[in-house]
Length: 121
Image 1 (cartoon, rainbow, N blue to C red):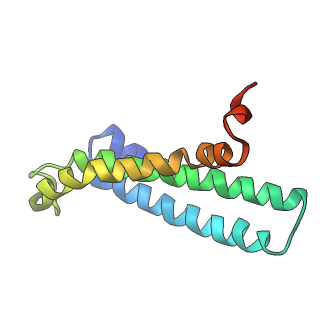
Image 2 (cartoon, rainbow, N blue to C red; image 1 turned 90 degrees about the vertical axis):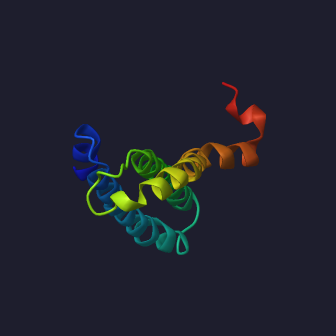
């Protein structure tokens, strides 16, 4: 909810805090719910865990992208971090790019495994 509140009210710190909390949750869910069980299973169950990991990494990428977008919105009048506004704006583009790369991670891995023909209907 913090992510939505921060984005809707143009309060970047709230959106960033919400995205970080979501990232922590996704990381724990990915490791504990999919990566560790993946080591103990095979077949279709292993495929399901692998796909869930890829989906979660993609979601993490979207959250990181959102953090980058919100970093760009920090101004000198932003409470607590206003003095870092120039640094935040400088970092924003790189953070957004990392987020986008992770967001399309699932497509990149499928392209590597199946080649361009894997995307044809």
